[in-house]
Length: 200
Image (tube, helix red, strand yellow):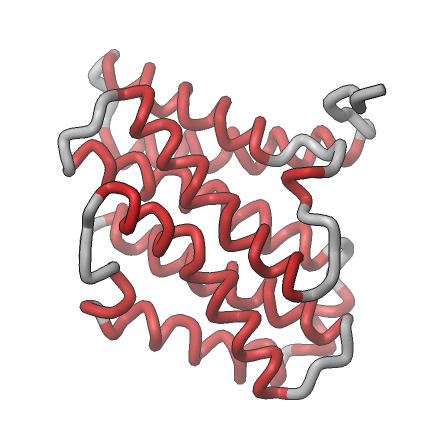
């Protein structure tokens, strides 16, 4: 298993937990929460694959994505006490997820011969669309449409990843640095209340 594939599966897992936590906050039953976990975890990748013509989409042809989502359910339930006690739990798992999916989305787009600008766009799509679907289904205003630095963090990370790739940096190290950058941007933005100006 290469690092990119591992990151993609980890991203699927943590996004599923993010969906489960928001569903729990909305007091959904187990079935409803599982549906939210699924759409959060694979929504972005599904839209990306459909846009670039990578069909059947990844989670249909690879059982490991389904396993990652299924495992997230008992893990979230069993360790609920510890997960709930984490400060800004949904934020933490969501930030990890968007970082990992930005990279995997870009790499898949490049493998299908897309230009750098389209690959960067597909990285952002992979990262944010699952969360958008999750929030809409949970009757929340999607994070991407609020003042929080969200999609912007993915865009900066995607550009960073592309530049380091062109500089010839070791691929695995690039994955780690880009993931750290996107996560750090989100953490710093929340800590210091940084945001994109609202339209007036």
